Length: 485
Ligand SMILES: NC(=O)NC(NC(N)=O)C(=O)[O-]
Ligand SMILES: [Zn+2]
Ligand SMILES: [Zn+2]
Image (cartoon, rainbow, N blue to C red; front, top):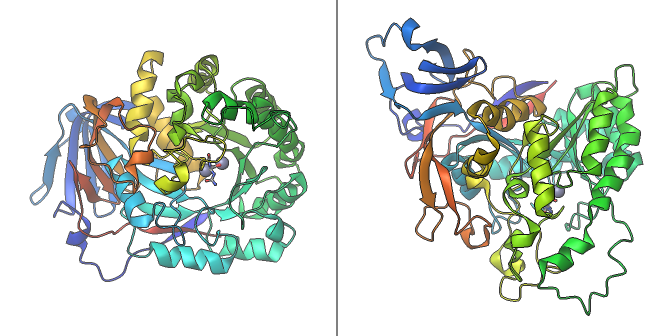
């Protein structure tokens, strides 16, 4: 897919960046490139990276070129978050484009792909995509693309789906269980099969929330179970739900094999939590040649069911955070390459709907709020497993950029867009109430109160320094990324 970008009109460029220069060099002893970590310099001209050189090969700055020396700080490709719900338009009181993309910039995320649900209306047609585009106009501090929704109402209507894809969504997203959003009903394998055959023509992916409601859980007497206890919620969504959904999905991902009826389409399973049977099924399908990938999220890697306190609904999400042995297996799968990448699944709401006072896990809104902290969380919790900087770049930039079809993003390489995060892996900080948090409702974030390592110093998007040490560029100059055939 080719891309075109919709840039905000009539903004003086200097308002877009905290750096007045358009030609500059970023120097560091630790630059993470596709060829390894180098000590050297990254040349930027306008929007693009024009050279990546080692210290020895660097000829220095020409006249008029600025040099920013970050010393030992890590210079890495900006993060690409392919799974975030910014809820704008319609539920901007839950998050919104301005707050969500400011949080992204502060967290080193330079591109974010917005989910088609939780905004009102959901993005399931060209008309509703138009509303997204209008809402994002002049309101985004990082680059933003959009997923469209695959729902029963459009799945058998290939002209509606094609129109939505022609209008620029980067791919489609669907649910195999109720989404909690009225205008985003769930799809079954027949809908998904239809969706994949349309997507094949466009070579764009389908992202699926893979949980299938089974009877398990229904034998629970929810009147006698303690709804404030996390274990009650956990019992209502067992790993068997993920496994059943994935088993069903694999009956249609066969079509994506070379020579299959949906060759060219790709299926991406979002937010895997079950690291046992579900993961085994995915591994097997990959071996068989299905075009399939899978992500997990920092909250499944950071937390365990055992440590979630009664009533602390900040930790409610679907699929649920499971037990400690499962978390170990998730890390193992990630380190072994069986889980392809990471995403935030930032899914906030208003504090009232999290029911923090009442603490009812069965009635509270499900969704983890943590967009701004995904880099330090992955790093802090991953250190004991030996996570490397190269792996962070692979899971958070290179692979997500590829899924979204973003050819000029995801790596520090000459010719790519200058999307860069500069951060200090050893700097620790407490996520206390004083910490500058830009998501709209910090109180519902599962990460508040934690001590993390990995502080973001600076974030560049398309050559603009959009965030620097607690400060954002004055104007929101992120571009909208739309796919084009
Ligand atoms: N409607 C939602 O945002 N749901 C989300 N909620 C979670 N993950 O708890 C999701 O991604 O499924
Ligand atoms: Zn989901
Ligand atoms: Zn989600």
